[in-house]
Image (cartoon, rainbow, N blue to C red; front, side, top):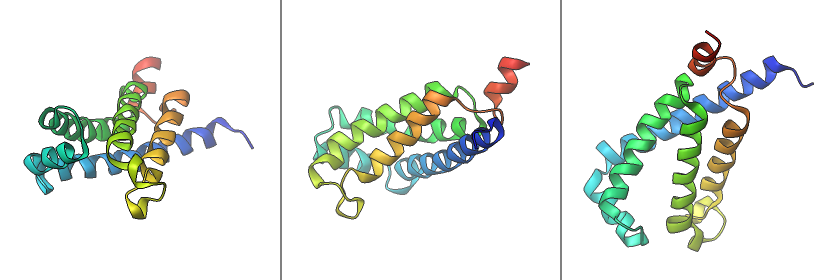
Length: 135
C-alpha cells in the first residue's frame, strides 16, 4: 500500500515527533541546564568552541524543531538538524557504545535516519512548504 496520503501522514507524524523532541532539547539547553552548563558539558566531550557550539545547538534545535512542526524550510532544517545530531553522536555518544541506556549512539542514529527521510521525501502536503510552493 503505497498511497500519497499515507506517505504524507507518515511525514507529518515524523515531523511533529521530531519537532517536539528538538524543541524540548533546545529549551533544555537554554532554560533547563542553561548555556553555561551545556558549554561545560560540550567542553568535557571535546566539542570544539564549546560556548559557541552550545548556543548554536540550542538555537538550531529550538527554532529548527518549530520549523519542522509547521513544515517550513523543512528539507534545509532537517539537513541542518541531521548534521547537528551526527556531530553530537560523534563527540558525545560514539565512545559509549551502541545502546542509549549507556549514552551510546543509538538515539542520535535514529534521529539522523528519521531526519534523512524528511530530507529525501520532503515535508509532505500537510506543510507550509507545500502551501507556499503550490500557492
